[in-house]
Length: 509
Image (cartoon, rainbow, N blue to C red; front, top):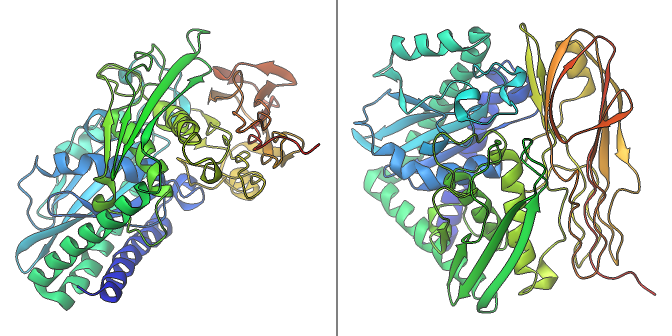
């Protein structure tokens, strides 16, 4: 296939994923999907290899890319089947992220899969927002092992009954799952049209050409990194049950056209929920190296085959059942990115930014009648070419903050302040970006869980740049811990000050 034709093929497949995302956003009910855009859409080959995606959320897409090959082998697929799963130990991330998979048949043969993954604030957890301060996955809500949501177009009552028996507001969650099914249907229809332009054999040839081309570009990018072994260590503040920092150590071996990332010296799994399934760890690793590839590199399995990952079972970054994992997806994944970038800064300093805020600042809240969850942006790290960005989601998240109007319309809250946190970025030749301040006034008794990082250990400056400012959580003006479960009263005020990005380079004389 000619390069131009291949480029058009890539654009068309990615456009299908964008259209799936647009359909999901329009048909869902919850602000998590419609406003925060906490969802991702992708296309996979008949054997489960990623070949198309929209620019959605890296931790969703990378984990699906890692795990889909194993998932698709579990079923004898037929037209109009739909499978649902959220099991973190079978390719998921954490329980609120529910994945819906639909096969695509062309000329009677299984040709591909459409998949959506979306965050659901109610997944049957006792804690509001389904992001608890947990010590076991069984405290985190309903674990859905891969099963049919519908078979041959007929809803599977057993699955629906399972959902309705565990969820607090099942109709709301089920409506958003139905929106995912609808988005998949959009992907099925559009991919069938695309495949018909090539016929089935030509479509499969195009996929093979895509994988080969992506692999070629990925190898070319790796060759620009000097061969060698680059090591670094970072740490998470604590797991919410102990005050001890949690070490993540990485060794990155670059050899010709291959990368090996080894987490051998990383801490063992912890009591709290910072543990990472291997699929989430893979997503963070993929994100870093894909970011170093040229813009022309297709985001597909071919570009990821140059990366090898080694992580001991039972470690923080290869957690096993029944480890708690709710924050591994959102917090530990960020620190994995930080530590790999720190290691690579030894090899290619001009291409690697200083540490960004290094947390998603998770706020989960609600009562018996409502659930809400959001992440809050912060500063990004400075780099050789300039300062960091202010108030941006970075690295493993790509969501938006819910607008003040939507928050106050849907929930018993007032947003008293929403502003940049001045002077929070690290100093240096180039300054880090500024964090944010978000202040909530509670209008009725509400349970809140905070899962936040960089409250003790700051974002790391690179090349003598200054560290970013620590994040701060306050309740009624008093500083509270980074990971905490709260029961708030009417008119209590919760204030989150997010970390600034770190600086890059020494200050000029």
